[in-house]
Image 1: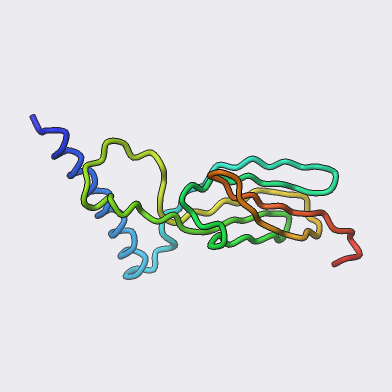
Image 2: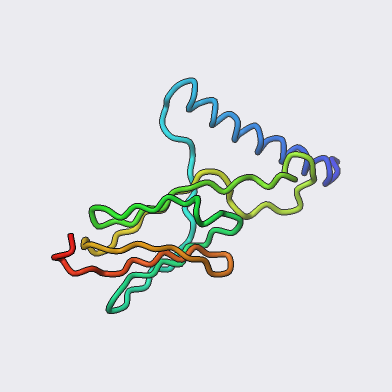
Length: 134
């Protein structure tokens, strides 16, 4: 029977190779964008704004691309792999890493967009603007 330590090293190596394979696939064959994951979010509407709480542990909030257009809020970015991943045994690997993109439908109107942080979250505020402000 294979020990847990060897199994963990094999899993870490397999995950690393899968990530590298996806990068090579995109570069060499142009078969589309690399795989992405969707961060969970809460979207709350008040009388004056929409507020999105997006769970992004370990992601610099300033590095997240925020786009509001055509009745959609789109968030894009990257959660880097933990540096220990390549040299350690994995006991549990539940948090996704790599490119992410999340798109949600919102009312199609003008907004003033701002960002802030809450513990473990990016908070995106979309303040509703009068239609004449466009």
